[in-house]
Length: 428
Image 1: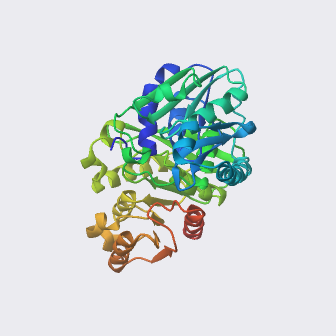
Image 2: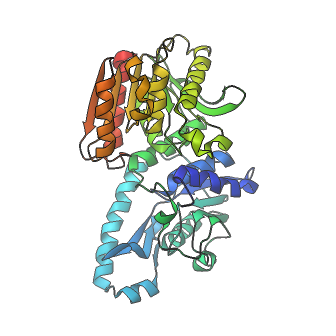
Image 3: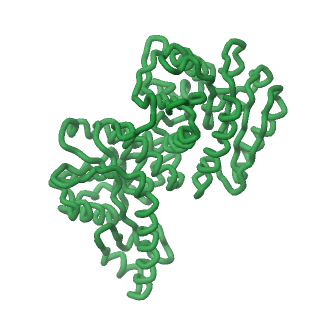
């Protein structure tokens, strides 16, 4: 494994692209999996983020193998070698293309409201995906971007086969990758977490980047902030709607960051409900590489408390009740912090949390606590049921039917956002 998840991959890819900073750029992620990677790149390069809509045409009996791709503006790219080797008939190809064209059109409609005005015309377009296998999708993306008038195309991926530059030919003017292994079977083999990115996460990434560049109205504050954490600083994003009724601090899970698309999706739901949010990095980049610190619950809880103290002294936030939203190992940090006698947090929500990592502190938690667990996540469900028996505060365990650990199934993150917004709105 090379990457923890797409956020980690995006950070590492961004480090390879620092020479582009300051140019007239637009970063274009390939939905869905390429968008969280592209969000990290756009953040590092201080560039606008948009998407390039393309759909892989998978071999009928092996959908992960691309026999071609289609994109916006009628672009269509076929891999004649794969078509021949797989024995795909013209009729079978037409059936796959019809199906994928329908998906492309639906996503065009679904993402329309979240997309900004990041026009690549006359600019350098940085096309980003979470990896490259056959190259068909990347070729289609580059052709789409060229048709949209980009002056220069940079194709960037975290991982690709060692001969990938030859595969894409002259479709891109420049190419960048982090890893180019000799043995390459599938992109997912190089990620610890390669779960499917949802449409909700794509929308959250687009909105967060667009709104973070000053395209948001009706907010008292919506800005990148620096939070002192005992000798170091953490980056964060503070969002306060006008007349906010409370503010929620997010504690992300292991291997993630303040750019977690899942937490961004939930934060957007809370903002729409009139709640403020603070997403921040619990660890510095150097600390995040230390697995011992990643699972150091007392350290993470202390950082959460420090961020809460900083927030209390900030204009407009001191009078607001606060809540904690924790995901995975971040939920343990939230519960640990909430167990402190002087913490004062008004409510806690855990999504797919690991409360067992704060087991010794659970009876001391006094804040009303909502535990949200996927019904298709039996191990974590068992851990939360055990934690429920240890809690002495007001609490509730909600099982979301059909949801896995990461709630990547369609509509499931929206359900988490609804549950969290209702819990916090009533108690903050």
